[in-house]
Image 1 (spheres, rainbow, N blue to C red):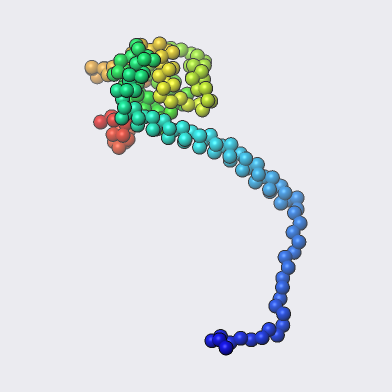
Image 2: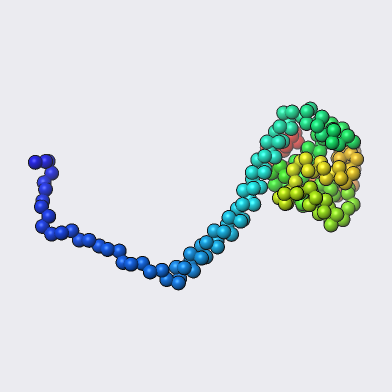
Length: 195
Protein backbone atom coordinates (compact mmCIF):
# COMPACT_ATOMS: atom_id res chain seq x y z
CA UNK A 1 0.00 0.00 0.00
CA UNK A 2 1.32 3.36 -0.94
CA UNK A 3 0.94 6.72 0.64
CA UNK A 4 -1.72 7.77 -1.89
CA UNK A 5 -5.26 6.60 -1.86
CA UNK A 6 -6.25 4.64 -4.90
CA UNK A 7 -9.71 4.25 -6.30
CA UNK A 8 -10.74 1.58 -8.75
CA UNK A 9 -12.18 2.86 -12.00
CA UNK A 10 -15.89 2.52 -11.92
CA UNK A 11 -16.50 3.83 -15.41
CA UNK A 12 -14.37 3.94 -18.48
CA UNK A 13 -12.73 7.32 -19.14
CA UNK A 14 -14.30 9.58 -21.69
CA UNK A 15 -12.55 9.50 -25.05
CA UNK A 16 -12.82 12.37 -27.46
CA UNK A 17 -12.07 12.01 -31.12
CA UNK A 18 -11.04 14.94 -33.23
CA UNK A 19 -13.49 15.68 -35.99
CA UNK A 20 -12.26 14.97 -39.48
CA UNK A 21 -10.70 18.11 -40.95
CA UNK A 22 -11.67 18.97 -44.46
CA UNK A 23 -9.72 21.74 -46.17
CA UNK A 24 -11.93 24.44 -47.46
CA UNK A 25 -11.19 26.70 -50.39
CA UNK A 26 -10.50 29.59 -47.96
CA UNK A 27 -7.75 27.59 -46.28
CA UNK A 28 -6.21 26.77 -49.65
CA UNK A 29 -6.26 30.44 -50.65
CA UNK A 30 -4.62 31.41 -47.36
CA UNK A 31 -1.96 28.74 -47.86
CA UNK A 32 -1.29 30.00 -51.41
CA UNK A 33 -1.06 33.59 -50.15
CA UNK A 34 1.30 32.57 -47.36
CA UNK A 35 3.45 30.68 -49.86
CA UNK A 36 3.62 33.66 -52.22
CA UNK A 37 4.44 36.03 -49.36
CA UNK A 38 7.21 33.72 -48.22
CA UNK A 39 8.71 33.62 -51.73
CA UNK A 40 8.56 37.43 -52.04
CA UNK A 41 10.16 37.80 -48.62
CA UNK A 42 12.97 35.46 -49.60
CA UNK A 43 13.67 37.41 -52.81
CA UNK A 44 13.67 40.72 -50.93
CA UNK A 45 15.79 39.48 -48.03
CA UNK A 46 18.28 37.72 -50.29
CA UNK A 47 19.59 41.02 -51.67
CA UNK A 48 19.76 42.54 -48.18
CA UNK A 49 21.66 39.56 -46.80
CA UNK A 50 24.04 39.55 -49.78
CA UNK A 51 24.71 43.26 -49.33
CA UNK A 52 25.36 42.72 -45.62
CA UNK A 53 27.80 39.90 -46.33
CA UNK A 54 29.57 41.96 -48.98
CA UNK A 55 29.72 44.93 -46.61
CA UNK A 56 31.38 42.81 -43.90
CA UNK A 57 33.95 41.57 -46.44
CA UNK A 58 34.71 45.11 -47.54
CA UNK A 59 35.02 46.25 -43.93
CA UNK A 60 37.58 43.48 -43.38
CA UNK A 61 39.43 44.68 -46.50
CA UNK A 62 39.47 48.25 -45.18
CA UNK A 63 40.83 47.01 -41.86
CA UNK A 64 43.50 45.14 -43.81
CA UNK A 65 44.34 48.32 -45.70
CA UNK A 66 44.87 50.13 -42.44
CA UNK A 67 47.17 47.47 -41.02
CA UNK A 68 49.16 46.77 -44.21
CA UNK A 69 48.92 50.12 -45.92
CA UNK A 70 52.46 50.26 -47.33
CA UNK A 71 52.07 46.85 -49.01
CA UNK A 72 48.63 47.80 -50.33
CA UNK A 73 50.03 51.02 -51.80
CA UNK A 74 52.85 49.10 -53.49
CA UNK A 75 50.29 46.80 -55.15
CA UNK A 76 48.09 49.72 -56.18
CA UNK A 77 51.07 51.63 -57.52
CA UNK A 78 51.66 48.79 -60.00
CA UNK A 79 48.12 49.15 -61.36
CA UNK A 80 47.89 52.95 -61.21
CA UNK A 81 51.37 54.47 -61.61
CA UNK A 82 50.04 58.01 -62.13
CA UNK A 83 48.94 58.29 -58.49
CA UNK A 84 51.18 58.84 -55.49
CA UNK A 85 50.83 57.09 -52.11
CA UNK A 86 49.25 60.29 -50.78
CA UNK A 87 46.69 60.14 -53.61
CA UNK A 88 45.76 56.59 -52.60
CA UNK A 89 45.31 57.68 -49.01
CA UNK A 90 43.17 60.61 -50.15
CA UNK A 91 41.13 58.29 -52.34
CA UNK A 92 40.53 55.96 -49.43
CA UNK A 93 39.29 58.86 -47.30
CA UNK A 94 37.22 60.19 -50.20
CA UNK A 95 35.63 56.78 -50.67
CA UNK A 96 34.57 56.70 -47.01
CA UNK A 97 33.19 60.26 -47.19
CA UNK A 98 31.01 59.40 -50.18
CA UNK A 99 29.86 56.10 -48.62
CA UNK A 100 26.51 57.51 -47.48
CA UNK A 101 25.28 54.21 -45.98
CA UNK A 102 28.55 53.47 -44.15
CA UNK A 103 28.67 49.96 -45.63
CA UNK A 104 32.06 50.25 -47.37
CA UNK A 105 30.31 50.20 -50.74
CA UNK A 106 29.24 53.01 -53.08
CA UNK A 107 25.94 52.86 -54.91
CA UNK A 108 25.40 54.74 -58.16
CA UNK A 109 24.20 57.94 -56.42
CA UNK A 110 27.29 57.99 -54.19
CA UNK A 111 29.45 57.42 -57.24
CA UNK A 112 27.80 60.37 -59.04
CA UNK A 113 28.53 62.62 -56.05
CA UNK A 114 32.16 61.53 -56.14
CA UNK A 115 32.45 62.33 -59.86
CA UNK A 116 30.73 65.67 -59.37
CA UNK A 117 33.19 66.44 -56.61
CA UNK A 118 36.05 65.57 -58.97
CA UNK A 119 34.51 67.94 -61.55
CA UNK A 120 33.88 65.24 -64.14
CA UNK A 121 31.68 66.43 -67.04
CA UNK A 122 30.54 63.08 -68.43
CA UNK A 123 26.86 62.45 -69.11
CA UNK A 124 24.69 60.34 -66.79
CA UNK A 125 24.48 57.63 -69.46
CA UNK A 126 28.28 57.45 -69.71
CA UNK A 127 28.57 57.28 -65.93
CA UNK A 128 26.00 54.50 -65.73
CA UNK A 129 27.76 52.53 -68.47
CA UNK A 130 31.10 52.85 -66.68
CA UNK A 131 29.54 51.92 -63.33
CA UNK A 132 27.85 48.85 -64.83
CA UNK A 133 31.07 47.80 -66.56
CA UNK A 134 32.78 47.48 -63.17
CA UNK A 135 29.74 46.13 -61.28
CA UNK A 136 29.96 42.75 -63.00
CA UNK A 137 28.09 40.87 -60.24
CA UNK A 138 25.12 43.28 -60.53
CA UNK A 139 25.19 44.24 -56.84
CA UNK A 140 24.37 47.87 -57.74
CA UNK A 141 27.34 48.91 -55.64
CA UNK A 142 31.10 49.03 -56.01
CA UNK A 143 33.93 48.48 -53.56
CA UNK A 144 37.11 50.53 -53.12
CA UNK A 145 39.14 48.64 -55.73
CA UNK A 146 36.38 48.99 -58.32
CA UNK A 147 36.15 52.67 -57.42
CA UNK A 148 39.86 53.10 -58.18
CA UNK A 149 39.35 51.32 -61.49
CA UNK A 150 36.53 53.71 -62.44
CA UNK A 151 38.46 56.82 -61.49
CA UNK A 152 41.37 55.53 -63.53
CA UNK A 153 39.02 54.98 -66.51
CA UNK A 154 37.82 58.57 -66.19
CA UNK A 155 41.45 59.69 -66.40
CA UNK A 156 41.37 61.76 -63.26
CA UNK A 157 44.98 62.75 -62.84
CA UNK A 158 45.01 63.90 -59.24
CA UNK A 159 42.12 62.14 -57.59
CA UNK A 160 41.26 64.75 -55.00
CA UNK A 161 41.61 68.49 -55.19
CA UNK A 162 43.91 69.51 -52.36
CA UNK A 163 42.46 71.41 -49.45
CA UNK A 164 42.15 75.11 -50.25
CA UNK A 165 44.59 77.48 -48.57
CA UNK A 166 42.04 80.25 -48.20
CA UNK A 167 38.47 80.45 -46.96
CA UNK A 168 37.17 81.55 -50.38
CA UNK A 169 35.64 78.33 -51.71
CA UNK A 170 33.36 78.77 -54.68
CA UNK A 171 32.69 75.17 -55.60
CA UNK A 172 29.12 74.34 -54.37
CA UNK A 173 29.81 70.59 -54.23
CA UNK A 174 32.82 71.20 -52.00
CA UNK A 175 30.74 73.51 -49.81
CA UNK A 176 28.07 70.80 -49.44
CA UNK A 177 30.68 68.24 -48.40
CA UNK A 178 32.23 70.62 -45.88
CA UNK A 179 28.76 71.38 -44.53
CA UNK A 180 28.00 67.65 -44.16
CA UNK A 181 31.30 67.10 -42.35
CA UNK A 182 30.53 69.97 -39.98
CA UNK A 183 27.11 68.45 -39.19
CA UNK A 184 28.58 64.99 -38.54
CA UNK A 185 28.31 63.47 -35.11
CA UNK A 186 31.70 63.80 -33.31
CA UNK A 187 31.91 60.05 -32.69
CA UNK A 188 31.30 59.25 -36.37
CA UNK A 189 33.84 61.94 -37.32
CA UNK A 190 36.43 60.31 -35.08
CA UNK A 191 35.64 56.90 -36.58
CA UNK A 192 36.31 58.29 -40.04
CA UNK A 193 39.50 60.04 -38.94
CA UNK A 194 38.20 63.58 -39.38
CA UNK A 195 39.73 64.76 -36.10
